Length: 116
Image 1: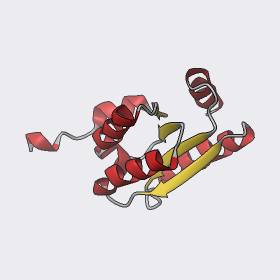
Image 2 (image 1 turned 90 degrees about the vertical axis):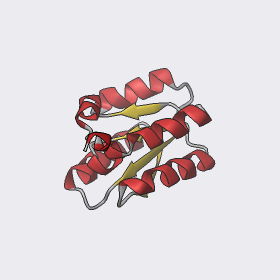
Image 3 (image 1 turned 180 degrees about the vertical axis):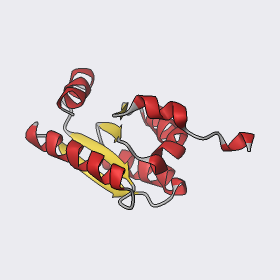
């Protein structure tokens, strides 16, 4: 996680606040959030966390982070957020907020519900 935070800092100068949506009902999401929380704290970066219990929550949470003025979004190992990753990317693009993913390879495993 140290390398991940250093990457964020190298891309976003003056990185002070990161927004992290995660589903507290997912053990993997909780572990990833805790790891990121600890590393950001060590590096003096504030983390704002908001719970998402369903993929339909992600757009609203992304908008709330943007309204709070986060410098970047982070998405950790969280299946709920991955399902609605397009919502995060939409707000990131509209608001010009960098979007970082701790496990980018998992984005390719996102189910395509349009094909069902």
